[in-house]
Image: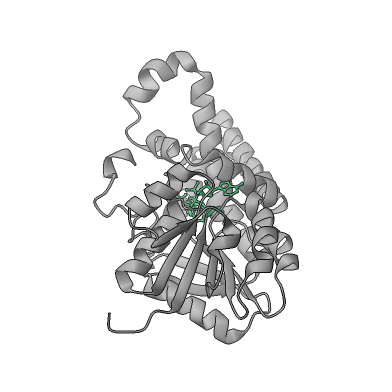
Length: 307
Ligand SMILES: NC(=O)c1ccc[n+]([C@@H]2O[C@H](COP(=O)([O-])OP(=O)(O)OC[C@H]3O[C@@H](n4cnc5c(N)ncnc54)[C@H](O)[C@@H]3O)[C@@H](O)[C@H]2O)c1
Ligand SMILES: O=C(O)C(=O)C[C@]1(C(=O)O)C=C[C@@H](O)C=C1
């Protein structure tokens, strides 16, 4: 290892897809002196040790954060407050607490009040994931060339820079953003699209007669992508919608208006409207590719067939 670790001891609370990927990315680049992990079940802790995600596991979050200079909350958004209350009295002075939750305002409201003076709280969100979850799901390349958004909620700039360095060394592109703006942007780019995918797969399931035959047999393209997204973790996504309620409802309202406009164009045979609409959306896709940001479904030669 040619450089000192960014953090001497990192505590990962919750050992699923994101924690596992962080652990492997940190190990690969020598970014943590020691990685300590905790999860609720012995089975998860065992897998984490077996996969080499952690150097050590603890039964409780309180034990795991002892003497850690970085604590990463990697649990569903709705579980963040309980964990914050549990770890607060055990945090080392000067430590940084961050999280990877998909919603930011709700996490700040839930966690910040419990963080003691002298601890840096810097909410974060890697814009990278898959539909897989649990301790087997993580892989070191997950964050490569993907954005990680950090929220500046008044934390010490040096502590933010240090955390940004960790993410950069794990391969991510880091940007600092305001929490409310984050939640609105993610409602457009991630949360509402997931809800639409869940809905579409639900519609197909309602037509069970079709599901049993054609839907599965012929789901090579668009629908298959929807089923991948709709296979994402139910607890995580329940919490996302319950905690990013206003922004999601705002975007869903707009979505419904557009859908009605398209529905009307189909009913009235307004081909020009449909063509113009699809021309505009095609340009957006091409813009994303031209900007070199078409990294939405990293494959890395693993699990390509499942996507
Ligand atoms: N999966 C994604 O695509 C993705 C991407 C970016 C951020 N996130 C966010 O990262 C966080 C973790 O997601 P993940 O995909 O790693 O999930 P995961 O399901 O793979 O792992 C979650 C971990 O939290 C534990 N956990 C669940 N409920 C808990 C509770 N009530 N108390 C304590 N531990 C609990 C689980 O046992 C597991 O160890 C979530 O907040 C999610 O919003 C997910
Ligand atoms: O590719 C996927 O499976 C994802 O949905 C990942 C995705 C996203 O919407 O882009 C999902 C939730 C997150 O908070 C961040 C990333």
